[in-house]
Length: 308
Length: 292
Image (cartoon, rainbow over all chains, first blue to last red; front, side, top):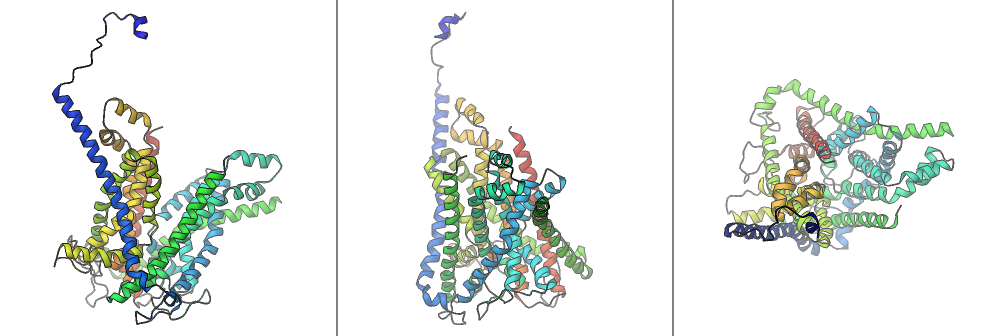
């Protein structure tokens, strides 16, 4: 319509540009290439999923028959058929409990400070870069730190406490980062409203900001703890034992955990021990998946419910 | 009231400063023992000797075999994870229908949540026998290939997830311009999206590399304990992380030279991963500045 108004000096050709045989052939070729790639990529994506299924299947098929109540309540033994994971899972529970008690308050406090108090000073910049770096340090290095500082220097030995302190340092960066993310989602207007009512800074944080960001914080903490209970290397390095004939009853006791028990069984040549390992892996994976599922559910719910 | 608030603020600050203390602690502990180590072993021997035998009577302290093992397994894992991860990232961000992406992405991320000892089990009990069937009489019961492949699967979600984010962050206008020129999706991906998201993709690869180098349990279970300067992926080797596990599982007295070796090896690992992590921060900074 506009063309008629403008009156072009030369009438524009209405014909389609001629498509030569060559250019048409090329277009078809590129489109074919695109299609082929699409299915190739779908296959690649499926491969990732297939490997996951294969991994789970292989563990379940060889470990499921071994898994019974006796396996969970028995002490470790040199005979594969009699051995159980009682000391291993009690050790894991102890580690989980103590690590949470240590890392949760410190991590959340640090997250609050970095998000609410620290100004763009050089100090807070330094702390931020430092946390990002800590998150990338291999877990085995934390083991060396724990071995030297907690086990030797503070003379705590290869105790549950040493293990928990080490793992707490390991998961602190994760908790801090997720706490900050959760606090960031709380809109500033909420704080202003609280200030306008005369609340102090801490009152605002305690009564408004924290309750609003609890689901996010808890999600991060659960993911961090689930990471901690799967960790093996740092605990081996601090000296956690592979064979413990009793369950720990205090933080100063020696201990073993599920992943170390699995490592120990996998390292033996007999097939019966490999089956024990598979059965223990089923238990460990169940714990990990349940914790991850809770975290995903909490995150999903908080995203749905809260609309600012 | 104000005094209480000041106290709270100081406490919160103390908690965040604790992270600095962790870093200082790591550096002090590693340096202290490493300096002790270098009193007995020269730095030149450590860096140039081709044998690592601190636990034998004929002690040699060349870090090269351990690093060769570490890099061999890492290289294999990247060969598996980088192409596969990139293709998955492209598929999920450009081709896949929304519902497929919503399901597949979290499922793939399960791979990242699985404890590494489970991957070690998988490598030793399933992948190695499978490789032995594939190449009869050539594959050792312990080798670099099997843990390498399995480690590739472990770092796959890291690469696919971060790369997909990078592809997604490319402005839609660039993509639309390419489509308007008549380009197919694949052409757009190859000539517009991947170059534009290149630094984001490299961040994911560098982070995966750093993860793979520091990974312990998969190699401790499936790669063996024989430090060896080789590029052959079918024979037993030992990685730096495995060596630390091997020593700490045995009964090595504090302050012996063997005890100090694990800190020297740890220091080497720490420096390598620190450099890689900072390369990734630098890349990330550049990439967030690129399109505004």
